[in-house]
Image 1 (cartoon, rainbow, N blue to C red):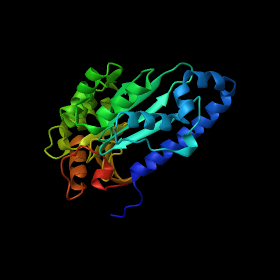
Image 2: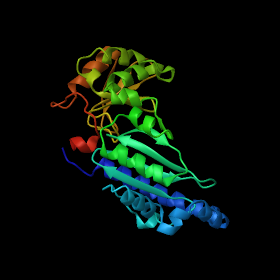
Image 3: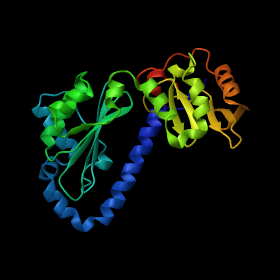
Length: 274
């Protein structure tokens, strides 16, 4: 298999470019409000940017965490963004434009498990240090920091039930009725039920990992108007078509030989890219 480029790196680069574009357009639209935004966040102005302000708070906590500083996104009030990473976790921090609010999120192994909202940058730094440098579950994070709200799926991922949960979520999704007959069989299959399912429009995909970016080296299944399923390998190579039973066989016959149950983590952890 030829590895072209890291999907995670590609995703991060696209996200950064999008943030820069939003920053500049938002900055132009709200140019007249620049002074009021500075008044909302004097600690950011004093530090020279959101990233520097957060790093100052980490230093006060004697934390080894540091923000990944992108000079192009520094001093871009009223819109600002920072990112902090540590091992298998990361957090993104945004600020509101019309009121003073820090808006952090909390990711682990490629899954966003919680969001926060607070006026105090000190609390943001404390919560990030707690989340990123410990192995605590999401509920303990929200219990300690009341401004953090766990995602409804957090307890599922914390208890290692994400694969089974997601299969059942797709099975019971009224907007996915066309794929239901295939999913019923896949859930009972000893191999397919251990892969992490996700959908792209009406297409059912399988990943070797439970976090984003996912892997894309397995067949995908798309429903047809006749009740059959089209199986593709890669983006557009059709490798078969048939009933749910036939589709199961085609998918299994075209799985990578070394296929194993989906792991917690991302495609980067497996070094498998599209």
